[in-house]
Length: 539
Image (cartoon, rainbow, N blue to C red; front, top):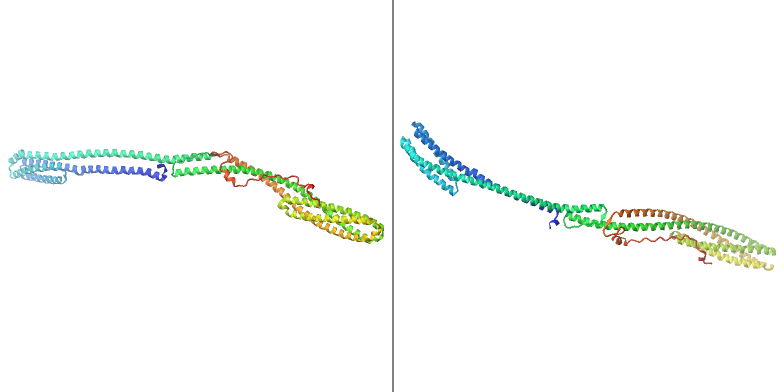
């Protein structure tokens, strides 16, 4: 119950107990000192003054006795009167003191003793009156006899009664002194006991409060030292609900959360190491593939340049064939020699047409190869794929046209080999051949334009491929650096010891990493980027 109280309340209880005991000690001391003061005041202001007044009565009686004696011894009237005046003064003082005693004495025994004094005094005063009357009348002998026989006896009784009063007051003073002494002793003992109890309670309360504070703080210090050493296996026991208990509970929660975070960081570092390795392998494969693709693009560009030269040559040949066809039409009437020349020219045309057919076939193959490479290039190869498709269409058209021209050329050769009688029929064929050659020239021009576009696209593809290769190399370097950083992070996290967990993973790593995308395994790019001719379809 006590350990669950707040620190302020604990301190308030401890100091409040001490203050309460000090208040009790102070109250007891004040009460006892008040009683002691009352006793001393009674002695100083009551009993002692009564004793003084009683002694003053005795002194007055003695003064009266001396004055009476002196009055008997004196013969001078003036001196006798003086002694008589002294007697009156002493009697007045005695009367005043007795009146004060009568007013101040309140106890029954004191009143009884005082009554006895007053009774004896009445006898004594009566004898004095007789003595004074005799002395005034000059009857000295009678006065002497009265003094020695009667007054001396009553005087002794009077003094004894007053001494009894003094004895009573002395006894009361002694009793008050002893009572005051006993009260002082008991007060001292009680104060000492209360002080001892207060000190013991203060020490016990201080020990309890100190222990309730220092013990949890010691546990917190040990836990902090263990955490500073990287030990997260510590178990913090919380058995109180005060501020120190809340501190230990917060540290316990912090240790658990830090353990979970460290486990997650370890798992993330391992995943990062694995992912960086995979990224490095993928980037290296991509860099190698980009380099090989760049070489293939350069080869394709060279082939396209050769094909462009062939197309240009085909165009020139078509123009030359057209001129020859026109010339043959004009010279068909010249005879057999012209027929022979026409046959020779037509054979040449047939050979050129075969070349055109082969060029169209090669163009078709290159366009198909370019389309495959564009598909592999992905997003960067879309434009190039469109151009390659157009080139392929042109190649197909050129091939069809070349086949048609070949068929026509073959027919023309057969017809030219016939007799001269067929020369009139050759002229229209020659005209038709001229038209076809013009179409071939136009198709060759279109092929030349398409090949130019292909060359431009191949240049762009080459630049893109080179950029991809450079980016792949940079990515590989970055992946290597990331791998090194991940390994360093793993070494740093190995400093911490986790309770119930391996040094490589923690229970919190599974849920934390479950929602993350798993790294993809790098797929190496095939080094052979050239398609096989067996995959092509012959048109």
